[in-house]
Image (cartoon, rainbow, N blue to C red):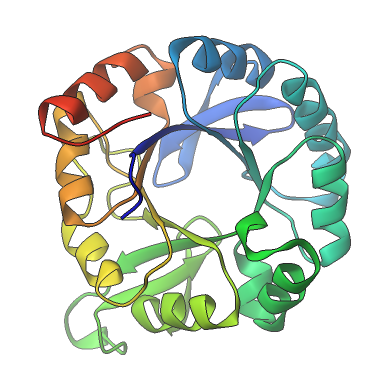
Length: 257
């Protein structure tokens, strides 16, 4: 684990607006991404993550504009993901102000993308986003019981999530954004078992995502092995502040930035 835990607000962006739902469905508007980013910077966020949830080419220019305007307002690392399919997409986002770039579906379709991006830009730039869910009953076909999904959890891949993060680390991923699709938007707490399972297999940093509902939910995720903790709706709708999360983490005996 890194020396200091990072607290990261996540902004899911669709057509230039921040949205949030449950399990990536029933999305509702949560505000202007540039304004929210500036507010989280003022609150003491350690990093920010933007995810283009539609990731369609028609929205790509909007996202580039949002990234550029945000980078002018904040002075902390900014990760951008969604629709990244080639090293050229990474180059474009870095040039308009991103510090790190998240890849998901494109890396599943072509794992060599991880190595190509890491070789060209450095593995510190590449964040592998993993949307994983638990398999149920007799239909389970992964060894770990955690399956990689795409399309906001709606499409099964048949890929074992634990195998995938190990493979991604070997290929050059610098960090894992581990999102529990079962917990996403539920505000019932992080999937601690999943975090522990991934921590056992990789040495690179893990960002825990999905399920935060209150400040007390964050320290257990760190105890399970997360180097950073990420949340969206509880920050967007003012349920918890970044300061309150950091206070809870400090009270649990961990160092925060």
